[in-house]
Image: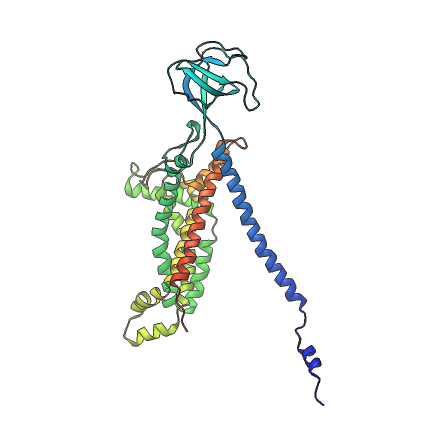
Length: 385
C-alpha cells in the first residue's frame, strides 16, 4: 500500500538540530562581538582625537600688563611690544580667562572679564598675557615639529619614522619571505617542509620585546662596527627596521606559500612539458599566477610592520626627529604612544589626547592597507576550473 503523501512530507521534513543552532548562535555572537569591539575602538579614538583638536593651547604673546588692574577694570593697559591680539581673541592672565572685545589702540585692550567659570581678580603690572589657540588639521598634517612643550604638534616626524622603519622592514622581509615560500612550495620535500614550517612558527612566536633587545644589543653594534660609530647612532631606524623585517618574514613566507600552493599543478606540468626548468616555472608561471595572494601577503606584512611597537620603542629612538637618514634616531607613532602613555600625564590634557589622535591616524593607515589588500585580491584573483 502506498504511503500517503502527507506522511512522506512529514518524514522528509528537516528535523531541528539543536546543536547546530547553538553553534550558529555562538558564531553569530562572536562576529557581532568583533564588530562591536571595533566600533568601540574607533569611538574611543575619535573621542580622544576630538578632545585633542578642541583642547585650548595657551601661547605666550610676549605682551604684559603695563599697570596694575583691579577686578572691575575692563580696559587693560598692555605693553606695545609683542604679538598683536585681535578683537574676539581669548586671553588668559594668571588663572583668569577673558575675551577681547575691542582694541582701541596698540597699548589697550577692551575685555570681558571672568569667562568660563573663572573669577575676575586683581593683577599686578608685568604679568604676561597668553593667547588661546587650538591645533588645526593643517598644522597637524603638514608641520615637521612635534614638541608638545612649545605647542608644536606636527605629526610628520612620527609618520616619516614609521614609514622609514616599515620600508626597511619590507626590504628585508619581502625577498626573504618570498624566497622561503618558493622553496617550501616548489623545492622542499615533504619531510623538509615538516622541519622548516615549525621553525618559522617558532620565529613568529618570539616575543617582540626580545626582538627589540636583539636589535639594540646585536644589530646596532654590528652596524656601528661595519659603518662606523660616527655614522650609526646607538638608537637608529635601520636596526629597528631590519629586526622588524625579521619579525614579519614568517608572516610573508606563510601567506605566500599558501598562495603559491593554491596554483593548480596543471600549470606547472604544462610549463615542464614546454621544456621550462623548475626555477623558470616557479618564477615565470607560479609566481605570476599567485600574484593576488602574494600582494595581499605583502600588504598585510606592511600593516604588521607599521603597527609594531616594542622593537621600535627599544631600538629606534625616544624623540620625534624629521630625518631621512636611517642611521639616525627617530620615534615612530607606536613608539611615541608607548612612551607618552607610560609617563605622568594628567587625564584629558592635550598631551594625553594627542595619543588618541596619533592612534586614529595609525588606525586609518592600517585600515587603508587592509582595504587595498582586499581590492587587489578581488582585482587580480585568478579562477581555475
